Each structure stands twice: as C-alpha cells, then as structure tokens.
Length: 240
Image (tube, rainbow, N blue to C red):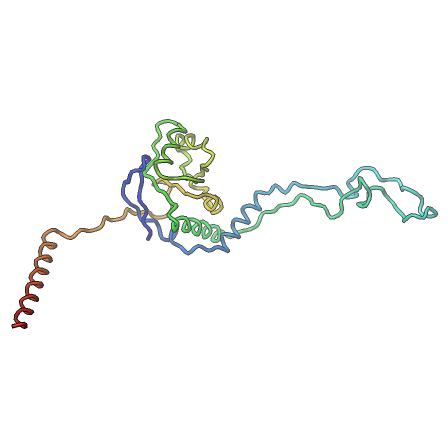
C-alpha cells in the first residue's frame, strides 16, 4: 500500500495515511481509460446538427424546363442536391452519440487514473479545509503552501459551501464533488487534491516506524564491542 503525507491547509505535516491499494495501487489500464474517456466526450455532444433534404427545402414544385427539346439533361426540380439552394444529400441529422460503457470499465478507468497520479506523487491529501468564510485569497495561499502548481482538481463535499466558493474563481482549479469523480477530469489535471473526508477507498493511518528500545540497543552495542575485543585477543595469541 502506498503512503501519502497528510497535510494541513498551511502545508504542515499532520501524519501519514495508507492509500487503498485497490484504488491507488492498480496497474493503469490504458485501453480501458481511452475507451471510457472517448465515451464520456461523445456523450457531451449535443447531436442537434441537421440539414434539409430535397423533400424539406421549400419550393421546387415546378419543373424548371420542359422534358425534351432543350438539349439539357432532364430535370424535375430545382431543389435537387446539385442545384444551388437545393437540399443536401446524405447530410447530418439529429442523433445521439452516447456509448454504452459497462460500470466495471468506468470504475477501472477511474482507479487506473488515480493510480497513475499516485505513482507520480501528484496526490495531495489535507486534513480539512476549514475555511471560516469564502475567500479566494485564502484558497490561493493554501495551494501555494501545499506546493501545487499547474492545473489542480479539488475534490470537495457538496455541502462544503465555503470551500467551493473559495476555489470557484481560480482559473487553474477545477472543482468536482466526490460523487462525480471520473477518469477524464483526473487525467486532465496535474494534481488531485483530496480532503480526508473525500478520499476514496479504505483509508488507514500509517503506523510510525518502530524504534528499538534504548536498553536493547545498548546491549547490542556491548555485544559488538566484546566480539571485537575477543577477535583482537585471538589475533594477538596467534601472532605469539
């Protein structure tokens, strides 16, 4: 399990957390991420483009000239596609561009994107934002204290109004609610910033490194000194 340092809003260390290996420690699946992102971008298309066929263009009811005797090719309407002002042949019509993507693929793409950012050290977790009032200056100072530069994706709770309003006017920050987190927005950002309450997966506090007791360390040191002394005495006896 990968470990990340828990930060405060001022950039100070507040402990360490072990990230969920099933969310932040999987092997990124690039084909799945590509398919999910393509489907998400396709779903954004309105699909309202439309052109008129020769049947929908007004006019053209009269035959332009008689059938025979003019030397021209016979024509039945001036609204044919090859006439100026006529209809469009095989033009676009309103349609839906949405693609059906399995839920398992969507979840795998998100885990792959988060794992990729975690491997690059671009995941930041803070204890809490705790803005007393909405203030853009405080939000900008917090990002600077955390060492975040470039595009940042800040994951917030829907009811955290002060945090949302504080980051809302920063052009380099994209806000997203925790229940709307997706692979595309993660991949479009340089940094992903979570609070402790919005961090996905099972989060556990990393245990501090155990230090050897002072008595045991002193005993080991004494044994090493005795072993060196015994080795030196054996060498002297062999020399005599």
